[in-house]
Length: 301
Ligand code: FDA
Image (cartoon, rainbow, N blue to C red):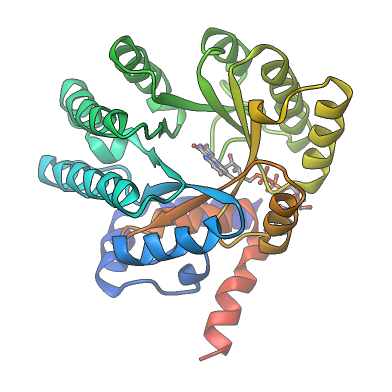
């Protein structure tokens, strides 16, 4: 718990975040971040596509407080969409509203998102709105509500640690939804704290959406839960085209390849870019054993 809190606090340290941008991928981040530019990320996607693995691309960045940075992020994501289209790779977009200005002004963020979703729509590319911490939950759903009035290529994430997740799941059941356990540190007031409670709710949400929803992305590295899902879809005759498993780039690579080779729809979340620091610290907070990624890089020099 102490390590988790330590890395979570580091993930939000603005000074370290800015310093990390200057120095490129360090501390083992290169194992879980697919490069710093579009050329590198497209290369990684092509490699994964060869194994029948589709990708969701995240131009790393979050908690942006300057308009010019949000605009820069928007332009970069538009370039990624162009690159996906031009290279004909099997990939879609994941993005974070705070990277596109949600903390600056709601309407500014909405217009940035609209531009992105519009462009992606022209190429038939899906855009996932990643979910951040509790403070951004409602405005992120509001963004989805407004975007879905005009576009059908958007979806979002349901975080199982929130008490209100079932309610949100039912409200948004007709969207393509990614279901996750939840990555941020949230107070007891809003969220389950105990791992067992989170896992129980996670399974409940997955089963409900598999039976009632449009398309379910089950995002986890938890092999026990994946096995549970495999048994559940078999028992309930859920067609293969109604769900996929998602994992993060660089994690459990053998399991990713195994699942894809068994014919399970599989999607890897592929982060790239210079703003890798917060993402990487959250991965260490989730699973301090990931520190061995850091150790390997340090000792392999
Ligand atoms: P968890 O960390 O609970 O581990 C459960 C068990 O799985 C472990 O005890 C171990 O046995 C096994 N395991 C896990 N990782 C392993 C590893 N690397 N190697 C070997 N065994 C391992 N969160 C959020 O709040 N908003 C979001 O938008 C997203 N988006 C997202 C996309 C994708 C594709 C993924 C995979 C995850 C997210 N998340 C997220 C993060 C998510 O909420 C959650 O914090 C992490 O996935 C960690 O939980 P897991 O279910 O993966 O396993």
